[in-house]
Length: 112
Length: 114
Image 1 (cartoon, helix red, strand yellow):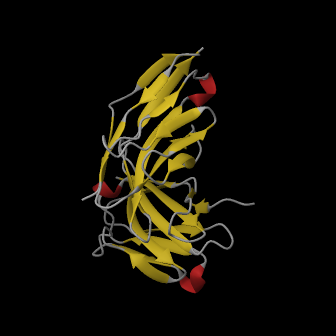
Image 2 (spheres, each protein chain N blue to C red; image 1 turned 120 degrees about the vertical axis):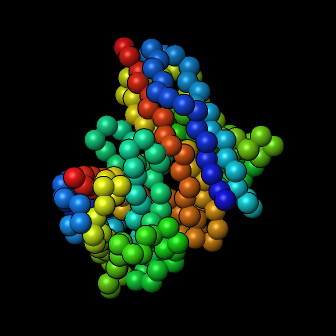
C-alpha cells in the first residue's frame, strides 16, 4: 500500500541555518505530494504541494521538488527562523478521492 | 472566512465509556474527513464524506467507531465503547471537492482514555 517515510527527528538548528528534511514515498500510480506544517497550538496547514514529477512547490521560503526517479520530496529552506519551529508532515494524495497518507512528522526547533 | 471548528478541544474518559466529537466544516465544503493522530505518528484517515455520503471508511473500526454527516454539513464521530488505544487527537478536515483540493484542518480534539 501507499506509505511515506520521513527522516527521524527531532531536528534542532540555529537561526539562519540551512534546512533539509527528507521524505520518500511508496505509491501506486501518480500521487500528488504535500508538506503540511503544525505550529504550536494550531491545526495542520498546507505548506506546499506538487502534483507531478519535476514540479517544485514553494511557500514562505520553503521548497520541495517532486522527484519520481528517487521517489522523494525533500523539504528545504535556505535560512530558517525561530518562527519556523513546528512539526512538519510529508504526505501523498492518491485516487479520485485524494486520500492523504501522512508520514510520522518531524519536530523542528530553531534557536536564536 | 471561518475555519473548521471542532469541539470539545479536550476530553478525558474511562475505558468502556462513550464519547462523541463534533465538527463544523468551512461553509460550502462538500468533502469532510475524520483523522486519528496517535502521539508520535502522522494523521490516519478514518472516514471521508462527500456531502452526506460515505466515500471511504476502510480504516474505521466499525465495531466501536461510527460517524455521520446529516444534511451534508456538520459531522459527529462517536466511539462506543472506548479503549485505551483510542487515546489520540481526532482531526476534522474539509475541502471544496476531493480531487486535488487542499484540505483545511481543524484544531483537533485530544482524547485521553484512562
